[in-house]
Length: 277
Image (cartoon, rainbow, N blue to C red; front, side, top):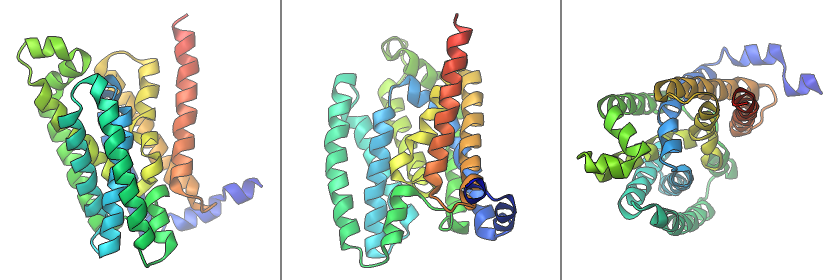
């Protein structure tokens, strides 16, 4: 049974292939950007928005697949537009969930329609839900690298005001921080990252990389910089480890990534309880 779940020889053999090495690099880049923005998502209570962005990226990807465009571009456009809508229409906390729910329901309906109309292989459309490692390619790596640079640049420039606006938006607005603008920019940034994550872990389990590592880090550390570094470490372990452990059994990457993230969170939750005693 254990040999069926994990074979060291088979894993090492598969690691020599170019498409697997490309997937590992993509997972490492995705783990970096997910770990960087995850703590801000947790602080801003945007978990549902992440879910909505990932599902709307599925709509864009499914449409691109249907009409013959590049899936990554479709996912990027759909997710970025959704995140911008969330940022513009759902600024107030009491409005945010309802706005996301309305847009999410409409987008998912369109995604189901596009997948139903797609005449190609079922496995191709199914990969949009569960992720895949064979479809990253050099163009996908290049796009992910651009997104990585974009995230690092935005967070470097906006770190202090974004942190202030995330912790206490009302006080930040009183000090002249452009809270609304930062909210829209960050929502669009989340959408872009979610679109990239869909191609690795699938639309259904994007939260396992964007939310769970940051939530686990928050259980152990309180300082913002320490939380970000810890979140990046956890996201890297989940993303890269998920790729490696999924090779031999041939299961969807998202299953292993979600499992690793969940185990990390449970361990951090238990350690956090002991540290607070």
